[in-house]
Amino acid sequence: MRVDLRSDTVTVPTEKMRKAMYEAEVGDDVFGEDPTVNRLQELAAEICGREAALFVPSGTMANQVCVRVQAPRGSEVILEEESHIFLHEVGGLAALAQVQTRLLKGVKGIIQPRDLIPLFRPSGDIHAPRTSLVCIEQTSMMAGGTIYPLETIKEICDLTHERGARVHMDGARLFNAAVASGISPRDFAQPVDSLMFCLSKGLGCPVGSMIVGDKDFIEEARVARKLYGGGMRQAGVLAACGIVALTEMVDRLAEDHEKARIIAEAIEGSPIVDPEWNRPQTNIIIFPLKEPRAGELVQKLAQRGVLCLDLDDRRIRMVTHKDVSFEEVRFAAEVLGELLH
Ligand SMILES: Cc1ncc(COP(=O)(O)O)c(C=O)c1O
Image: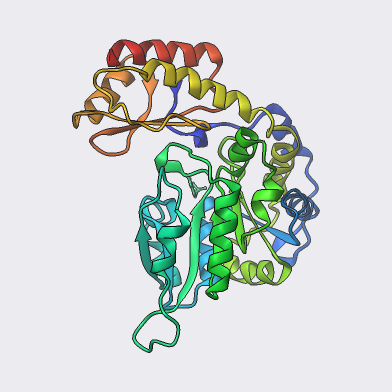
C-alpha cells in the first residue's frame, strides 16, 4: 500500500470536475469574457458575502497580489513568524512588493491581539516605515492546521483598522476552518480587507485560488495579476472545476478531519514525541520529536509505504485529504504507531 500524506495538494480532480472541464463554456478572461470564470468569481464572492472575487493560478500568486495592492513599497507588513507568506513564497514580499516584514510568534500559530499592538509603527515619525498590512493564516499551516477564532480575527481587524492599516487573510484552507468550527466562510470573510482561498488543496481542483474583497480592491488585484503573469485566457476549463469544488466538495472536508484524528491517536502517548504537540483541529497533523530524528523517521515511513514530510529536523507533517481512504489512513496509523511506540 502507498499512502500519500505529504500534502492535500496531491489531490486529483474528480470525475465530475473532468466532465465539467470538458463541457466548460469559455472565452478570453483577460477581456473579462470567460463566462465560466465569471460564474466562479460570482460564486466565490457570494459564498464569502463580499462584493467581488478574482480567479488566480495559485495561492502564492493570490497572496502576493493582495500584498502588492495593499502595501506600498517600503511599508511594513506584519506576519506570524512561520506564516506561508513569509516562509514559503520565495521572498516574494521583498522581491515583488518590495515591502519590509515584521514578524511575531503566535500561540499555536494564531497572532494574539495584545502582542500585535506594540508592533505598529508610530505615525508621524519620519524615521519609521509605515505599517500597511497585517497577514493572518486560516488555518495556520505550520502550527498544525489550527483555526483562527472569529473573535480573534475581529479583534485583530478592529485594532489594525484603528491604526490605519489593513488585514489580509491567507485562507488557503478557509473551508477546513469553516467545516471544523461550524462558522461560515462568510463570517470569517467579513472583517478582513482581503482574503484568498485555495481550490487546489482539500477541495480537489487541479489549479487555482480565489481572491475576494471589495470591488475597487478586486479591480486593482486584476491589474496586479496581469503584472505577475497571471492573466489567463480560456481559463474556464479550470474555473469549471472550481464551481464543482465550491458546490460539492466542501462538506466532505469533515471526513479529512476525522482521518486526521485517526492518525493523531497513533501518535498519542509516544515516548519519542514531545507531549506538548498541537492536536489536529483540521486536516494537518504536525508532531515534534524529542530528538532531531525527523528525516530518519520519514524515510522509515516511506519504506513502509507511508509518505509524509519532515519540516525541519524535529517536526513531521502529515496531511489528510480526499484521495486517501479510511482504510489507507488506518494502515498509515498502524505503521506510524509501530514506529513511534
Ligand atoms: C497556508 C498556505 N498559503 C498559501 C499557499 C500557496 O498555495 P499554492 O501552492 O497554490 O501557491 C499554501 C500552499 O501550500 C499554503 O499552505
